[in-house]
Image (cartoon, rainbow, N blue to C red; front, side, top):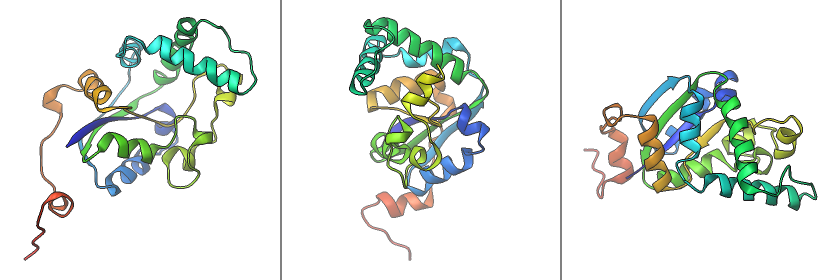
Length: 195
């Protein structure tokens, strides 16, 4: 069983999409094992994004390449500098109001949640059936023109290793529940005996 971190971001909270997001994850067969609403501060957001020591460089390179693919001039050619600009925008966005942080568990949880949420840029997400594709009109271009972070409703861990680190940052072990659902038998057991 894998665990993954999901955060309903401020725009998801403000648009009353918490229940819809939870519903989609539950319907997939995943099980929520932890949840809380909190107002993150800038320190928590910085720790979250810089769990990977290469985050500034990788984020900056991705951002610069995205600009160039669209025929636009990036704000800087220095990936570290661009990564720092992105982090500042993320801090402003994610500390705006409360978020809902959750841990979901299930087979291939990380990959499944990423599919359900859709691509990071909502404009490029599958138009039907993903959270971002169904509920966002956001694009990198729109966010850049407004000089703000991309408002894409939800965060989902990108890998199992990333999920483990992120969960440890947002939750204490005692906050994560270990319990069985009746439906787990239907989904996971070798033999399903309803007699």
